[in-house]
Amino acid sequence: METAPPPRSPWGPPTTPPGEVDWSRHAVPIARAERAPHPTLPLAAGAGALVVLVVSLLGSKVVLDLLVDRGWPVVVYVALLAVAGYGPSLMWWWYASRRWGTGRRWRDVGVVPRWSDIGWGPVVWFATVAIQVVVGAIVLFAGVPLANNTDDIASFDVDRTYTVAIVITAVVAAPIVEELVFRGLVMRSLLSKLPALPAIGLQGILFGVAHVDPVRGAGNIGLAIVLSAVGTSFGGAAYLLRRIGPTMVAHALFNGIVMILLLTGIRDRIIEQNPDVFDDLGSVVEQVAVVDQPHLAEPHGGGDPHEAR
Image 1 (cartoon, rainbow, N blue to C red):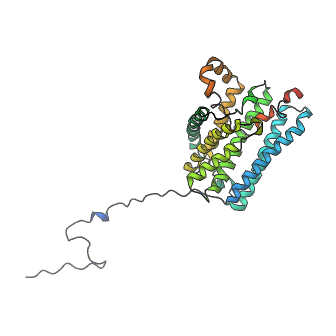
Image 2 (image 1 turned 135 degrees about the vertical axis):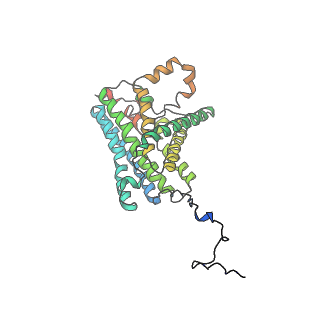
Image 3 (image 1 turned 45 degrees about the vertical axis):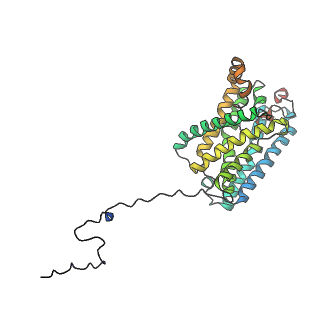
């Protein structure tokens, strides 16, 4: 006697023989999370940021030279340098966000504050210092001239008001503005035209070149190379984390720790006690990424604003 075939399912023929379990139907699909691409901005946003920064920094030197003989307190000159040097860049960032971004000005350049930034900042700082020392050692070993952009700050006694002013500029203003410009506007604009590695490297080079000063002569070569490595390290971190809060923290640590070593005299005491160790590498570990701060000590190539007070 023939048995009737199993009833046909209204959903189509069975995919497995009768009596067997199709375990694939019970499997949980695993979706590979794809990372969102790094946000970009038009090239004009980054190019404009560079032009504005260079012009404003050059302009701040002119303003300082015109006003230094008036005998104002040194803190006034620090404030003028900060406003003239960094103020236009903030105005450009405000305009660029409205012109080419979403209008959410902080988010357009990657400022998305998180508590983890406090933890990532020291990690980025430590990695950056390690890279800085390695590159600096290579520069010195190769005989490339390397100037120090902190000697003028450490070369004279400062009062408390000046100390507070210059530390605020170095630890607050410089990290915020320079990260907005280089890792926010410049790198994001380069990413619109270049792959990640060239974009990160190029913005790092631009960061190093921005610290060049004719007063240092050939020493600018080594200084630009070392600080280009610093800028590249910050850029890599900003790209991987997709935000610049951690690099702002790292930049503040980078400047702040060196300023403490300089202004407290700890750096000089360490070098005096270990002259042989620091003969070659001492100038590497104290390169401070603060544009124009040393010129406050020598606005005329040798003058000291303290003498005018």
